[in-house]
Every structure is written in C-alpha cells, then in structure tokens.
Length: 132
Image (cartoon, rainbow, N blue to C red; front, side):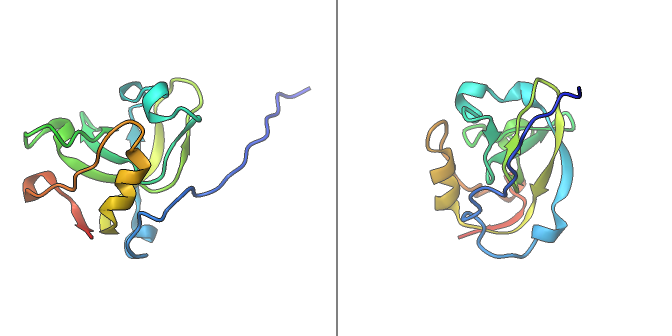
C-alpha cells in the first residue's frame, strides 16, 4: 500500500499585499530551511505568506532589519508570496514577491511572534517594492 498523506492547500493571509501588481511575476528561489527555526519561524509547520527574506549565498534566509550592511541578511530580497509547508530538512523552492506594493504594518503583524519588520529606507537594502 502506498504512503498517502492528506494536505490542505491555500494561499494564507495575503492582506500584506498592497496591490495585485507583481503577483504573477513572482520568481522561484531556493529557501535555506536551516536558517529558519521551527519554534520561531514556522511553529505551525508553515512559513507564512509575507515573510521578508534576504538572499545570502544564492539562497533565501530570514531578513534581518538590524544588519546595517549592503550584503547578507540585511539586504531585503522580497517576501514569500504564499504560505510554505515545511516538510523535513531539505531546502525547497518558494515564490518570491520582489516588486509591487506592500503594507508594512500587515507584514509586522505576521511577524509579531518572532521578529519585527522595518521597511528598508536605504535603497541599497531595498528591492523594487513600495511600502505603504
């Protein structure tokens, strides 16, 4: 008998999106799951839609707004577009929303349990996202 499992699919809470612009153009990037912790980043088994990420070493890691550099986790790559189920410890592809409008307060509400979100002010640490 094959191993079967039941899953529910949905897009999560996308109230952080300020417009529909950029949704169809989300690109696939690889998420470094070892940079995220289950207790903080995905206690319910999902990395939530809207999670801000940086690109380090070619892979997505949690964005760190306190890092004051032009490289590493302090450079925002964008936001994860949809909820992402974490299964095991293997890295996996996710849709990256990297241009359009984002409601910063809604992103902050998503992250309130484990981090704070501050929209990048310096253009060197930002993307083509307009924060409202």
